[in-house]
Image (cartoon, rainbow, N blue to C red; front, side, top):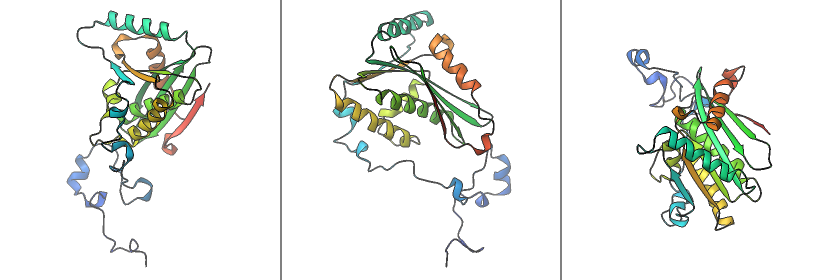
Length: 244
């Protein structure tokens, strides 16, 4: 007999039915019943994954292949915008460089992850993903994941520059401590491991672009993320739309 059938089945401690009436009243947002098979509680990652083994972590094997450029307090908005302009102008003339600009927004309970990829002599590649019941941090990380995946799939790319207004989210990629987003970071690390191992000169840079800068390339992605909503969001989980 099915152990989960009948009225005497043991409820998960995370089930909605385990909450008191008062708790249900004060809980904000959607209540997802863990007993519902569609929205079950699943492990986000495996701590035994090779990417988290002490001797094979990417931060130890390829420490010089990734870097972060932060918009520190010592930099004013004008200087930050100037550095972004100079960097993109320098890289945009090389067919071996990929500039990935990412953003995410949450509107009407739908998270939209956007990435725009710029490569010399290639049309602009836009990647759009919609998801429900996810936090903004996960949506930002998923946008970065999609952008890196697109860049790594292109032949002859030796340098990837990711421009994001969520640099703290990008730093989680290389954080070996436990956090809720390691499902995505593991996938990114696997992609980057392959990318770095393919050529010792391959590298990736993460640049912070604050929203207040209203920098042209990031502003275009931000506008795209806020205007791109599916017509029926109740049926959407992860719907990928790629246009070139």
